[in-house]
Image (tube, rainbow, N blue to C red; front, side):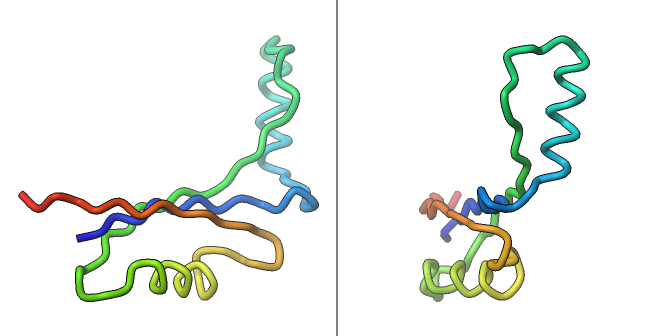
Length: 83
């Protein structure tokens, strides 16, 4: 079985209102060292051995997990040891 770890983030050119809200809250809490906060989505997806994991994850990201107009994504594939 393969585990895919997918991270989806807004592209640098897109305003991240949630990240801005968190940054402002941290600054109000006196965390002056904070310069920027970007928020994203994280998915862990287990895939059957019978599929091409890279092709499947690419398809999932393009079709559902990321809005490719506004977001970028990256992923890591990890072979899981069956117990």
